[in-house]
Length: 397
Image 1 (spheres, helix red, strand yellow):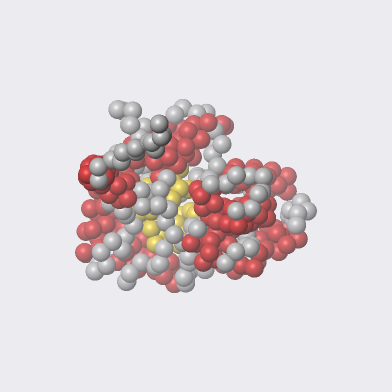
Image 2: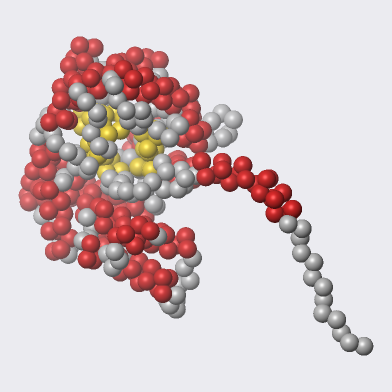
């Protein structure tokens, strides 16, 4: 008896339509909620400057101060090319992101004093020339400081006398509830209308520095709801090292970006921000490179280690509070990207050419490798001819 080939039955085409009907809304919601990482350069740091110290020449002043301390206390020997690159950076662009601070770094002066500082700082920011990124940190929208925060931002925008500079953001501190983010969205809308600014011209960052911002009383991740409440205006989440640590009862001597409570908060931030287009920034260290040579070198070693640690954790931005922190910010950042450059190029080339490389990389890893090389280019760790790939090719990946 002849054998018959098995008869395979296929699903009715209507099943495809059923699945599309069921999952189509899910596809749309995922696309809306997780549009993917934002394109373009991310600053490697944010420099916080008290509002009363803002003046048109502050950027070059910080660069000169950083170069002076570097000349006074030459760092331990490292690659001459890296040292030269850091010096060029300090001379050309010592500050990537400047934040005029009206909150903790500024204090609570009389209203007339802060009014005058807001006007003066805005005019100085305009006169300082183009910065890659800039903005101001207002006081929080909590009850005691709410009206002062709104008034300062209103006066600042008025004194800018025109659209904010490219890359301008407002930093909103001590956010604990999504309703505060919703209020910030409303405030941005009203300020745009009042000052004749384009719709959605104002964007803001959320500082994560209170325990309720990380986990709510119901056990859910409050930050995730904050991103949704921002309606696309939130550009970044910034970790606040000392307010957050203090709120959890960590002793002052042990408050640090590297403390376990900091790692937990930042891990939650990374999870909820992944794929949303909202960037992340680590916080600061309050150990400044000032005083004796031994003090400066110890602070440099600490700062460089913390910067490197953040980069290894996938946090590509942090805060700097003093000109003498700039050399270690750029040296540690450049070292990180230069150390991984050749291996990233080799793995990405092997992936693209389907070569046997000893490492089985997947598309997601290839995207990460391309992103690593792009970040190295953007921050100045290496020149275009050192990247190994055309920038457009890396961006496409």
